[in-house]
Image (cartoon, rainbow, N blue to C red; front, top):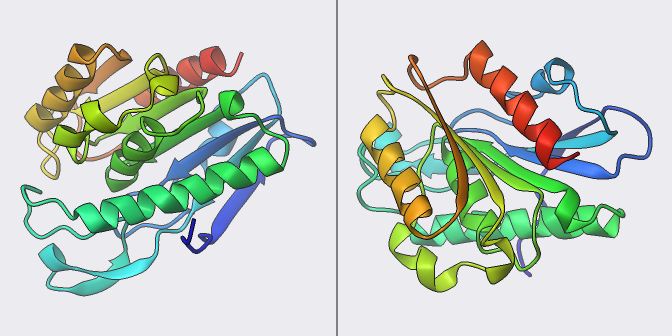
Length: 220
């Protein structure tokens, strides 16, 4: 792999963690965005939270402004996907997964999570990863490169638990687009748990509670 290791923020809930949650932020944010949730979600085992910072790049839809992004977005409806950028970020996640395994955390004890763009990359990388993961969490997002998934999906993660949640009033990623991604995954036989909330492009307290329940189950 030739991807450069990403800078990360790490939080360990107790010494010697044997489970890891890699949580990817959304466009224009950074790894600090979801770090406070490490204290809000009570988990039974020692966990290492890894919050990577996406690389800085110009984002076309934002007039070429340079910001942290997992891939470029050329139009607000995200009709033309930046396949090169998506696949580069997928490789960066593979580097993070390899590092956790080198630190003694089995793939089956790693959750790949993300919000918005980060959630798209969590799905992109997680569904293609060669070893079974503990779970994939995709918040306020969609399946990128959806037409390639059936051909590229890893058999190891065909049964991986997937948590998807979306706001019904999301102005950034249309609720219908998330529903289409949900339906695609269900049609392809994935074990998907779906949640919807009366909110915009955000995370709400009820969602955090549901995430906690799901994480405790997949990391039990």
